[in-house]
Image: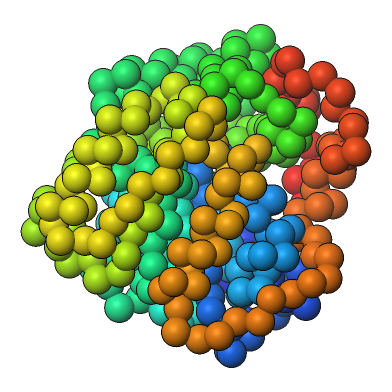
Length: 347
């Protein structure tokens, strides 16, 4: 995957990113005649939008995705103390400016959602529409705060030294995170995503990365506060929220409260409920997400965009195949979430 070097007020970053166009999985630039859809990934899973990027319904657009600091193969200076959602948004704006991206449709999930929301508040003309899946835009609820604190402490306790790791404790931490994100129902595709993402977590959040882990994970989540009505009223674009009813990390009320906060601020907002879906809705419920996303973009897009009828391939297809994933039936057991050791090659 290509990299884009940027300078921000918070240090230098070499963003891993991908541009997909109707004709290319790894384009050098966007097609200026087509809408741009910018994707903000969740915590620890930078390649989670695999299904969406292999769907012709969505590949009719320019799809641009990047890995945030301390994720994927993005390389960056250390997080500064007190790094916030606002700081992360400035990082993304620097990325957009360096890549010369026009105003775009934003798709954000989990960890990426408050970052995308902040840009819609502070730079509303950059955002044509905002599609938020499994939002974490409001202050973390008590149960989620407790869960993240436990995961943080468990991960840190598994790292005994520069070269020493308590494998079993680290696996327990991974399993706990899987319960949060997949509601303890890990599919073949979710298994493959975990096998790809876990070594990347080891790389970024190993012994020498524990400071980044604290700042970019625990502090970033637990220090976040809800936006005021005045701030939300700055949003100019329509917002679509998505919630899965099997999300054990966040209640439906958490999303409904955010819906009401947006409406109270005068934002054109709607909510899509996906029955039976976990927090990571996009992995196994793409048949619900993709058509809704397509229609939402087109509703907020003035240009006519031709459909494509040929097959397209996800830019991460080879990554998934490299860990044994096969949509035809490898990974026959979905019962257990397995992690690989030692560190795998994530390129």
